[in-house]
Length: 184
Image (cartoon, rainbow, N blue to C red):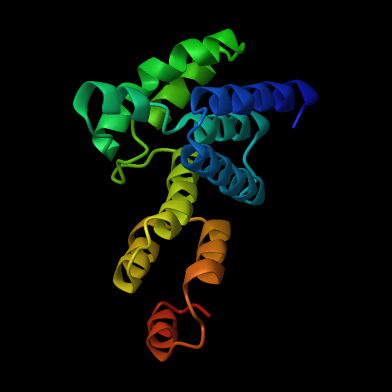
């Protein structure tokens, strides 16, 4: 990635840390989602622009939480999608992102809890990265973990990270399920 792109993403990260100041849980979340998104995106061979959009979206994907909590007293996924793009757009403009990049980033923010009709590798990877973090942070059940793997994960890198983090290869039920899918 070009140095200018990396600097822009670094400025966005710092701006999001400031935005979420005194909220270490959310700051930790955005850093972890970004890290997984960046790794998966590079492993899947995204072009530079798509990688930049993905990484920016990973930093700002939950930016709607504060506004949702203030206006609605809660911050479920649908409210994050509703309020996030309006919060992100001026920040992205201020940091010099291009209009088409801002449009796509805002689209991703506005859909990152919508798991049907995923259009694009940036969208798929953002959802996978958010799941990798949320399953741990939310202490998902074994059934929830297996369902997430079956229903959400499509990229080879995302599936590998998922298996390493959550699925015990020694578990006989897991082994039978993987064999039925033709996987190891």
